[in-house]
Length: 217
Image 1 (cartoon, rainbow, N blue to C red):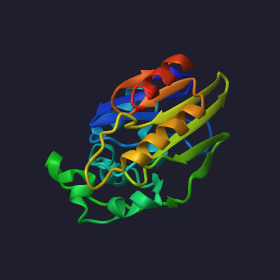
Image 2: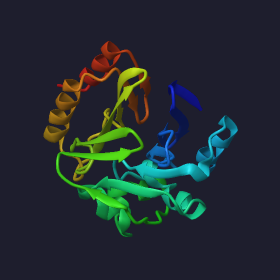
Image 3: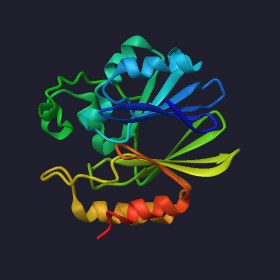
Image 4: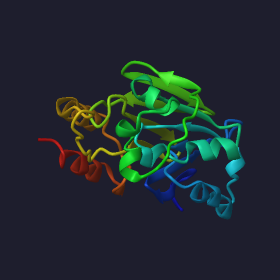
C-alpha cells in the first residue's frame, strides 16, 4: 500500500488497482473499485486504517477484476454502499451476465451486490465529507464506464481515477468511437495525477496527458 498524496492511497493490485480515499469525516473511507481480493482490502489495517470504516465504494465499470470482491466486502462490512453508472448496473446487481463481466474468462463465479445508487447521465457528484467525487461517464470500454475526478484543496491537485483507460476494446461490449471521444474528454480535465486501473499512477500533469494521448488515434 502506498500513499499517493495525503489521505489518498493505492491499496494494491488484485485483478485491478484499488484506490482508497480517507475523507477524514463521518463518511469514513471511500474505495475506487474492489478488485478480486478482500484480504488485500483488509490489510489496510496494517497502515492504521480500519477496513470497517470503508463506507462507500465507487465502481468504475462491471468487469469482474474490478467487482469480484464486492460481495465479500459487503458480507464483512455491512455499512459499505456501492455506486455505479446505470448502464453497467444490471450486470453488477444481477446474475447471468458472465460474458459482459468476463467472469467466464476469469473462471470466477460472481455474486451480485445491491447498489445504493445508479448514477445517471454524463456527470454525477457524490459528496462524502468535504470532497466532491465527480463521476464522469466515459463510455467505450463498457457502456457505463466512469472516471472519478477529485479536486483536493490541500495539496491543491486534481486526481483522476481513470480505470482501464488503456481498454481493451471488446467485440460486442465496447464501442471504439465512444472510447476515443471519452479519452479526448479526459484530456480536457487537465488532471495533475492519473490513477489508472492496471498501469499505475502517473504524475505530473504532463505525464497524465502523455499516457492518455498514447491511446488516442
